[in-house]
Amino acid sequence: MLESRVTTLNTLAHAVGELLTEVVGEGEAKVSGLSYDSRAVRRGDLFFCVPGTMADGHEFARAAVAGGATGVMTERALDLDAPQIVVHDARKGMARAAAAFFGDPAKDLVLLGVTGTNGKTTTAYLLESILRVSGQITGLVGTVETRIAGQTIPGVRTTPESVDLQALLADMRDHQVGSVAMEVTSHGLALNRVEGLRFRAAAFTNLTQDHLDFHGEMEDYFEAKRSLFLPHRVERGAVNIDDPYGRKLKDSVDVPCIGFGTSSAAEVRATAVELSPTGTGFVADTEAGALKISTPLIGSFNVFNCLAAIATAIQAGIETVAIEKGIAELQAVPGRFESIDEGQPYSLVVDYAHTPDSLDNVLGAARRLAQHNGGRVLCVFGCGGDRDRGKRPLMGAVAAREADLVVVTSDNPRSEDPDDIIGQILEGVLAERSEGADAVLPDRREAIARGISEARAGDVLVIAGKGHETGQQIGDRIIPFDDRQVARELLQKRGWGGSP
Image 1 (cartoon, rainbow, N blue to C red):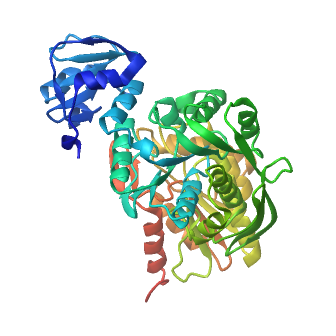
Image 2: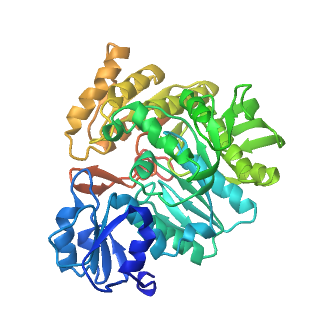
Image 3: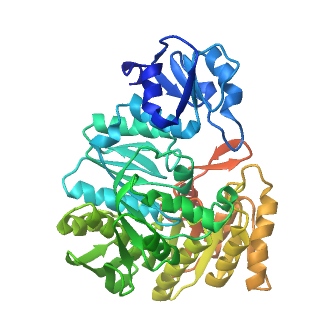
């Protein structure tokens, strides 16, 4: 696909607009592809010298040219025998150049965005279902997967780098996709991955502690999320006003926004909420009328996910009948309160919860289910390495408060020592219960097995942290590991799901 879209370096330089300061080098070098990874450069690529947290792309420009790059985009003139486009911001320039290279595919698509700490994935799935029911050929870009007109490819980054994102949007356009539901992360916003895109409508779900290893402070994290709601990025907004940061956002942006939540001030408000072990029902009072919502999704947090989708769809001009039907038709979201049923007499749920707030929400939903069945809540979880360390004791405290039995284990330790991460989790556990965790098992398979061995009829066992993920990152290796598959295997070994 890249080879069929050939343009000149000068044309791309013009597309960068006000970011361009000078072009260093002569000639009409042809560009047949784009790359920001020197290891993946192909002959004819324009290479982007993108500064990163671990390495600076400027250091790899010479290797990129040696590998066949026809020119580079850089933030400073380099001692390099190749045409150079010098820009103030390489990431922003890369996004603008990528849009030009792929023919600005976003202009042919209706984009609906979702940002916030928790709920992005489920809300995006709900929006895609609503769009599909409304008669659209749809696309989805998010944490779990990318979907293009019904075809699925695994997700790599929740919000892809701008070159990859523009390529995906071009592919969607070529497959006659009309509307796209997209998760928009704070990293994606801060790193200009969505530069040049304009969303028809976007939702803000909530803001709780996460990613402070990247943003530093909560206020910086909030400002990154808030930047989606600037007039050049979105036409209309839908904001959770039950969330204090949501109220702050709604009061401080210049795009038309409606609030959703359970408070009387919400333009899209949930009333008559009914939570059950098999689903959720409520009435959504809106200016377009009352919507009767019924969904198989479980838990009060999914009321807010549905409200986010309803408000965003209303802002995008979608008919209410399609909103009701689209929500009803979504049966489940991978790794989000996903039930693993091998016939065992208790519930086993796998969830991606990896923040204090999301773990609290999931364990609260598990508590209501356990109370209905007369059982307990059991929790197996860990925290990822090389990420926000401050949330680890907070998550330990949540598990100690909300679960009857706590098994602490490893998640994706990455470059950190798993025992160090576990030690920080246990600080929070001990702050809530003097006896500490019921078990500490760094081997995640052993920890899941312990949870299963402890579960009794009527209990709810929650395995939290990894959700849909199919690998565990240890050091620089990713080993195959899927909580859902491991749980099924262990259940079957205990005689469920087949012959003992």
